[in-house]
Length: 556
Image (cartoon, rainbow, N blue to C red):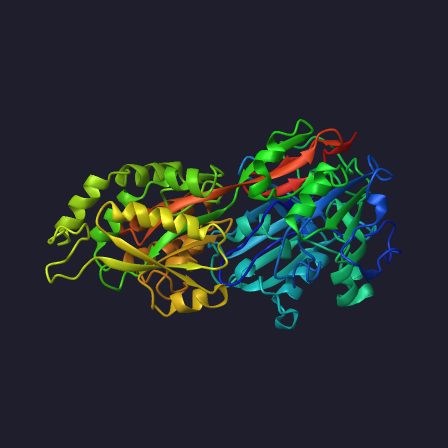
């Protein structure tokens, strides 16, 4: 199953997540009524169901379980829908429902060869016609999928060659096509026959797909219940970390919806919940010391950073931006603001993003070591010195280096992080005033260029995020760092399908960004899945996608 611990898509206003649904035997599921709950779970989730049902704590009540329509994609849909190809736990693209594929010489056509004998959770056969139906529905404007522009890119049409061969035909080559096809829930495959039989409303409440589980009941505000897909096979996700040939060992999974962190953790410690998908940071130490609890770490594919308005004084000077890069002590931020639950990042991509390069991370680390004295020298070269001895730098006209840094109310750790940055920059003569901006208006105000510097984050599973963040015409307006050579590298990255060739353009764009310093990369958060090892074993996390695989999981 493809559940995410925390699968947050932070491009524009999108966020993504996966979930499961279905029923045995061909036809409409018999236990698929969506009800409204009180927010409390049934008493049967305690001892009576222990060792029979895997109970997972979940903090959200999804808007829909239709992966093409949801604004939030996570484990709840990933359990249900398998994809044509997969991103393996080794970071490589591996087969899925398609056993092989090839790309045309011009990069505009990807041909997939489906496995024979695939059935969805209800027993409906899956052919190329079903694949075409899934993609056509996603492309249809009436579906109103918030994810469609991103995951489809310049897809023009889907062509069925025969029952087991299908072609994706693009207007132009789409660089992240394969990574997105391997990781994005809206591209999960389901039966056209099933969808047309139940209709869009029921499909969004109790979908059945090709994944390892399917939904049999959803009581809003209380729980979502899944049954295993009897037709699921390991070959649909032949990951080296998984051994079970299929179907899954655990028959029933229940997601208990508890939004309050203290209650969620209390239920987990009491044994009424067996798995926490994302341990609240404030409870990490407590749970880490519990002998009955096992913690599995992962790294978010989200970069937290300081962004500069590169067209506004004083940050229109590259030397100033480079100096601040050398004045920031990331380890201090992680230790005191994040309780150590993060890793420092120096380049524009984090290790869990497709396209990340250790070479470029090391290049950034060597170019900008933590060196406040060298930072002062760079600032002096740029004309910033303390002319009156008050500890604050002035330019040649006597203007003091006093700047405003914006933080969003939606970033819980931002105040602590900002205060540490404020203190670190004070050591090199820069006075920072912290301004808190409402989350609802933060990105809009930043896009208007009203800021000097800001503290925020961006994230996506793929290096394509660089195009969205930094391209002068195709990207969002954040740092206003526009260069022709950067646009060219990003364009080539976006239209090169061959992974090795594309990686060259990713690294070319990274180097331009590192040298130009439109931002200070800071850190990526560690996230933790916790499970009760006295109840369950065999849970696997994909470090590259944050998917949680339950194929090998067993109840004790």
